[in-house]
Image (tube, rainbow, N blue to C red):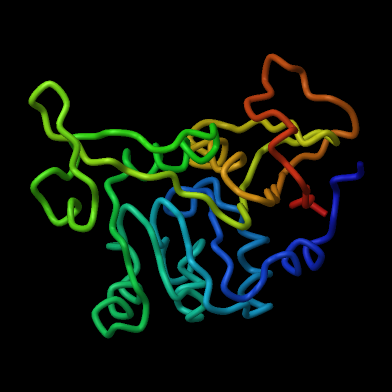
Length: 216
């Protein structure tokens, strides 16, 4: 199967109302060309799962400014005042989630787990609406997996099979998000028309459906 597709083909896979995961940490390791193409397409009523909502002019923040999200699930939004404004005005639902919890929820979806127990958030607003479970006298919250229709991720290198490698902190959420969506699209800096050395392939190609060459 040829996994390489164009930007236009990639963005056409995202439909109004979809749940979309986007890799990156304040724009570091984000698939910027995919994000820009999604801004241009204007797909609406999306739910975002991301570490943060970026900056107004960087990363997923551009999608926030373009009002393409109906819901945002993130660990913080402080670097994008527009996200806060939309939340306070009731224009966009924002679910703030502790960063470690968010990462583990995505990982649960990636590995087919039914959820996990954590003490993070017990006795706070994070607990609202969640099941409280007591084990050995200790209270835990049951956190459920986070799954997406489409994951948009970034890798420094991708081979034709979809195996990926990352540089430094650009790995962040990208690797785990690759297995937590129905369709995973990776934007890569360098495309290898062969196979990556398995010693550096951090994400196996079985998790990747499509590849967009970022340097094309």
